Length: 245
Image (cartoon, rainbow, N blue to C red; front, side):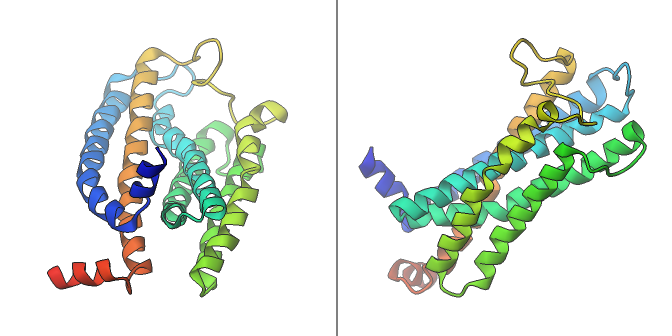
């Protein structure tokens, strides 16, 4: 197992292997998103309270889920980089940050658009919205530390520590609707008994969630490949790769 981890963490092996994986994840993400959006926009029935406006959930909810998921991947990767000094883990963390920030931004924007007809305002200082905004600032803080420190190892350590400390915000976001009196609706899909959402609405939502995860994998592999090339630009295998082009 450890030998496999060491092999996978080799920048050159990762660079070669990821080139084969990216098209599969990208195509799967595209097909699932097209099918999920078709079911969500044209097959799923209108909501009995919100009418057609609820359909924004097929972008908003998967984006919100991904904002948390990507941050956890980033924090875990940063932790692996700090503890075991695996360079590829730091690469994955750095490559994930802009993607996670994008998902968080989309979640906030679509949430605001959805909030206007539901709450009468684009923004309220609700516990869920505020903690999600803090998550966006954590992503920005990570990227700012990466960009502001010249020494790459020091940049990885400083930004990695911020990512790990920021994990405390994840359960706050998740449980905010239960801990505080909030305008944001409670859980409808991840309830312990059964989802309080019609199956015709749930299926496209889960398809979109899977599509967004596959899209993240494709994007992070693309960004990680570029990051590996940049960090190893003076190493022999990169020079040989350039010469072979």
